[in-house]
Length: 141
Image (cartoon, rainbow, N blue to C red):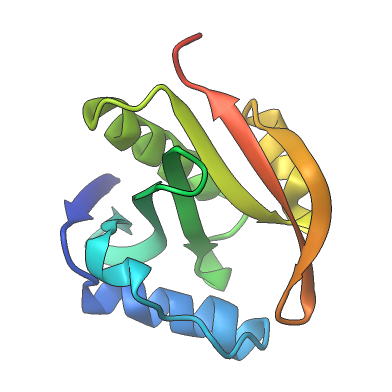
């Protein structure tokens, strides 16, 4: 297993996001301007792209944000989500960040809570899906 950071949206990351968010979950607006400024992290198992996320600095929230966290269906249940999150948090530390934020689908909150994230504010809709902001201090580890 290895993770690779890219300063552009690689085809492997775009393919996983298209599969998970658009084909499986029905999102329409998957790709945006943030893709141009984000660091894209791809987790590979035996040279096959299995999971992805992106990291970017949010002026609005004044912190680094992890987004578009996705694991291909055939690789779920192998703790790759937690592994890609660890890689993203390491990248945020490398960039000088001390907190990490994310926008969680409400149904995935438990996963992020196990990783030390706590909900912030009220739920909101992103397309057809309820979400909530979550954050974690990275300086405590």
